[in-house]
Length: 191
Image (tube, rainbow, N blue to C red; front, top):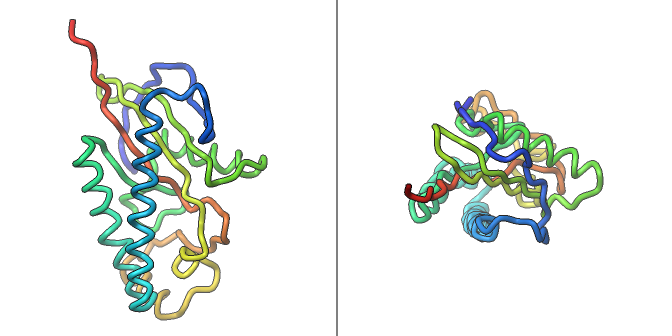
């Protein structure tokens, strides 16, 4: 599990929808970054699937972390993906992310559209304020090839080879697959 020494600086963790009027200024940029990550990953997954479903596994294993790294380097943020049911143990949620993911599940059960779910707050990490943001990843039909209930045996074999502790199966379209997660350092005013 990722280690995180985060103390809330605010007493409010925002449970927002895409139309929240109370959103801090970092939310719009985080939303745009999440949309970019999602579109880039989806495009590469669709290309991988054209060469066969086993090839799409390599996109998620190699390209998704690379896309996150490129986006993070460009913005100066930490960028990743996480889930309550991880495939890659490196994506295990920290406590703050787990709370966000659990909030997404509760909000989905209450009728909110998973495509609109986000979670954000200003927290202290290593003695400095950071803005944390998560955007839910709804399970699309495309995702079911490797994350659904009925997976091709060749895909199952490759997943077992690459991810022996894989928990990321059994999803249905519309389930919350996980979240994109961002940590943005906040500039502190100089004394």
